[in-house]
Structure formats: C-alpha cells, structure tokens
Length: 174
Image (spheres, rainbow, N blue to C red):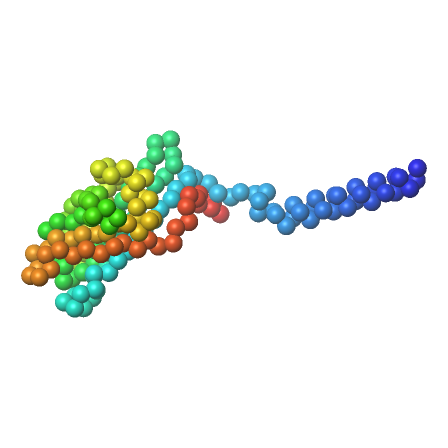
C-alpha cells in the first residue's frame, strides 16, 4: 500500500510539473490581447517603366475588408508619375486571365503633387464582387490599364504584383 501511494504521489507530482511547465511555455496562448474587428487587406503594386518616364511611375491598389455586423469593403489606388499627370484619359482594372476583361473603371481623377491618378471606393461598390476582385489580385490576375493622350503611349498596361498576404487578423490591444 505505501508503494502504491508513493507511485501515485510521484505520478501526481510529474503531472502537476508538466501542467505548470506546459502552461508557462504556452503563456501567450492563455492570454489573447487581440481586440477590434477582424480584417484583411492586400496591396498590389507595379511600375510603368518607360524610357520617357525617368521617375518610373509607381502604382498601388489596396483592398481592405472588415468583418463587422455591417461588413465594410473598401479600395484605394494611386499612380505617382509627373510624366503621366494630366495625360490619363481613362483607367481600368482588367483580368489578365480572361483576355483583359474589364473588372472596374477607375475614375481618372488626378491627385495632389505628383499623383497622376488617385482615389478610393469606400465603401466598395464596383461591378465585380469584392471577394472575386480580392482573389484575382491575390492570384496576380489584375492589371492596371491606363488610356493616355501621349503620342505612342495610348495604352499602358501593367500587372499588379501583390505584396505578401497574411489573411484575416485582429489588431493587438497592447
């Protein structure tokens, strides 16, 4: 009987020790300091590298989605180029995987300073469902197409390359 109690006591000690060690090693799993709404975003960029544009026009499109009671989807874009400023007649996002089918007309509004094109859709209300557009950007199937009044450069088209994507997440509170 004393042997059995001693064995049981050692087993309990080991189990307790393992439980304490395990909980301290995984302490970050016991406390979650995330707060706020879950969201995801993706940014995709390209450069219009042309000999006539020494600054190599930079373009970026960003899509953001929040999981809330009222889901919020938004998108913004910018093209930085002194050479293109004032020359963009129309702009579109097109699907490179389906013969450059038009996904979205981007208003050709110039921005401030060297922004040849700038704007946002917040909330997003484009003809292509937001989820589909998000996935196409992630799959590297979206190109920015610019129609200009520049001689010999009536159509400029560059595929947008997505930056690394982390998926859905919530911000840390601390």
